[in-house]
Image 1: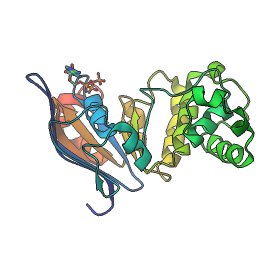
Image 2: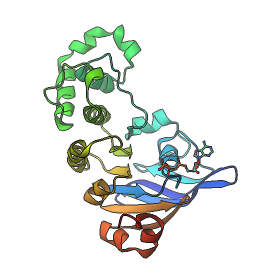
Image 3: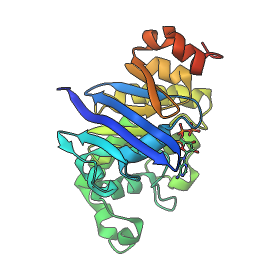
Length: 249
Ligand SMILES: Nc1ncnc2c1ncn2[C@@H]1O[C@H](COP(=O)(O)OP(=O)(O)OP(=O)(O)O)[C@@H](O)[C@H]1O
């Protein structure tokens, strides 16, 4: 697939007798949002963890930005531009919104930063951090301690921090979780803009968001992809309606 930034080839992962990932192949193309949906326990998180490097597949290959990354650790994948958000938050509550993005820009940890305060006065770094906050919809909130942000604002901050890594792809695991209707609407708009910075592999239960955002949807059931297609194709697919969308379609 020539315009795919991420390509997964026949991935397998078992936990004992349970096949959590069963011959999964999928791709993420430049500029697209590819949503991964499926019932609880279908294997979505297990797949995302194999892509981010938290767990190793038993078999299969993962290619990212033209390189095979199957055996690389999480940090090496992140350095190549694979940005994972939302399940493990790296926001430091005692730092301000701006400082959190500056930390992400320098790749420094909060512990290092306490001994490295002058960097927080760095002008170029500040400007760049402000730009990412603007993109993420947090302009005007820079000076607040991250601890007092609302849930939705924290999501935006995580996005700004991910942007600081200059990602080539985003892996987003249930970004809409815990958001109210207004927050979900705002985040949907933000993700829609974000795809132009880097394509998004989106695991999401909120079907309104999935149908509004996805260029393609893959449906995972018992570790297998039973269908991949456009929103219209997936909505019309009888097997998908039966096994997943039944009560929602
Ligand atoms: N470390 C593990 N050890 C054993 N079984 C596991 C492990 N991690 C996941 N599983 C099992 O693998 C299957 C897939 O789980 P996974 O969390 O990937 O599903 P999911 O689609 O992300 O579910 P949800 O939508 O509820 O988050 C489940 O049956 C789960 O119990």
